[in-house]
Length: 477
Image (cartoon, rainbow, N blue to C red; front, side, top):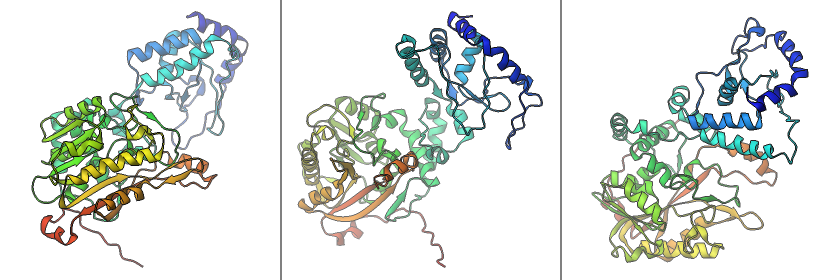
């Protein structure tokens, strides 16, 4: 037995015999969902084979190292048959090391607190245990196949859990199935509210995700870019934390914008503050796309993702977009710029997310959008996805959406449509009570602002009939 585990046994020796006796005499724990074992004395604590987390060898080695050098820390959770619910990786390594178990019964109405009486604030093992506890969690992985067997994506969205794309899902069969789904008739009615939580939306997003692949899901992430961790999330604002689809631009929304607001035929599209997903969807649908990306690594990743399509990403400041495209050459201007400094993308001085004040951010936005609009043909649309964010000493909203409308109006465009994009509730339910102490409501939507350059009377002649779902009307009583 490892020395640390042996010391732990000695420290618990006095209570150990009493615990074993109590364990043998425990009354069965009643449950409406699973039968209690016939004799709790025979209860066998074991790892549940249907554990949602995978523990690679590196993760197992780190758990074992922590147990050997620091002793047991967290408690684990088992059901009333002894099968693990949480802590399966720890249980497996503890069994191999011969660490004894102390059973604590609870009905879930109390929190079991593990007090390490042998660890003082200045004990070096305290820091080691805190480090190992977080590191071992980071090294484990979701068992994606098992998750998909037990849960659908709508249920996971309620817990703010988004299933990542794994390579095994990107085989030829999965891609063909995704293409078949995208060939179905478009499912979204043309209302002023779009609900990303609906089943048909989730199914279509899943199909796009399979086609775009892992590079698409990480390439445009406002939480994690280029392999996780290069973006520093701002803690200034609490109004957008629940927007699951902010971090990765929703490909279904991209498809809606391209199908609703492009004229007939192959079209040219530009984006002064580009991300990867919109360019992929545009290229897949057969259009020509030009995006400006300020970060060289992100531009390279985006170009790799759209290889084979008529799409390109230019590494430059979005304020210079007009130097890369001829005037009056584009059929659509699209952009989803940074939401001020809600998330920090880079240390570049001309990065819109890296501005010290709102005036500097707005100046970059105006220059980029003005340049893009100068490249837009007449009788064409410009679409900007944005959300207002809280900031400043008083926690008031920066009215970014209204400021963008004023920018577009100064360039001769009119605000033609306002669409609300409803996102999954996610962690909003958890934060709502805290925010309501100051009477702040949790924001769970974004705005899709649609502008038009030219005479709206010409729209019907230039644009095809939109492919949309049949509209179901409920009888009012």
